[in-house]
Length: 271
Image (cartoon, rainbow, N blue to C red; front, side, top):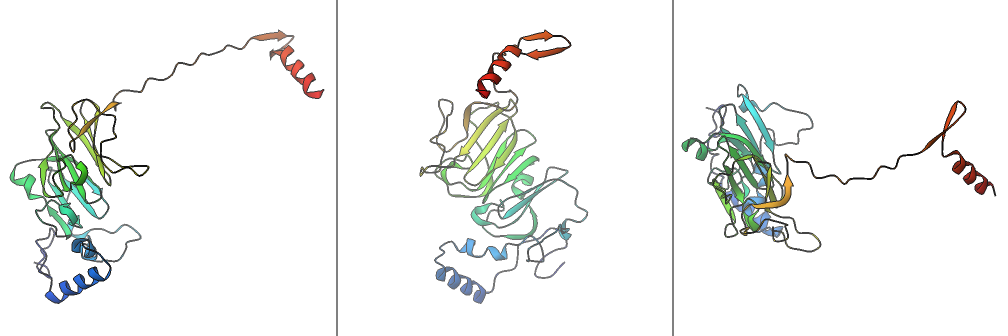
């Protein structure tokens, strides 16, 4: 066992914060006009024992001896995938982005137990801005974190999802191979090359959301929308350009392209 309630390797829940420290954080939040206490405590959501910025790669001691096959860094939380399909998250727990059922941050990688207890193995994952998504080995998509405006495909009636939830793709036979999370939107790639978008980025003063997307008919607000005309396995049709063949006239041992035309242009330019 390590100090402050932590074990060597993966961490357990951090010890309770002293009341005086909580009061100080609330005062600082109120002074700055910040309503979300979780966001004001980001300084406590660390990924290494050393809270200072790292200017060069540093080994995460708690992952020594851990065989990772995938990693993903989001805005303020990170994810690690082990060789058995187990998913670990750490960093800021804002909006439930870590998937541990709460809003707490984690200094060390902690396994997402929701997948383990349901015997779900992960093969790909992505971390965005307080949002997370993952694809299982069976092609199902799971999402958690900030769900506003349908940015993770879980509908419009939810704000914070603290435990991974299955994303309803609207097609029973759909199998995903990849996911990517951004700021206010996410992308899901299907085995057939189809591209689905969750949420959307508002431009020119428009609100965020997917209401402006060119999507297939029957798209449900807040759920993944199949983008029309996109497929990662197919090349976009290229325009056919008419190739004009140049005429070459042979003069002695030289071949000049349009010699008469060139000479005429030369004469005009001199004039």
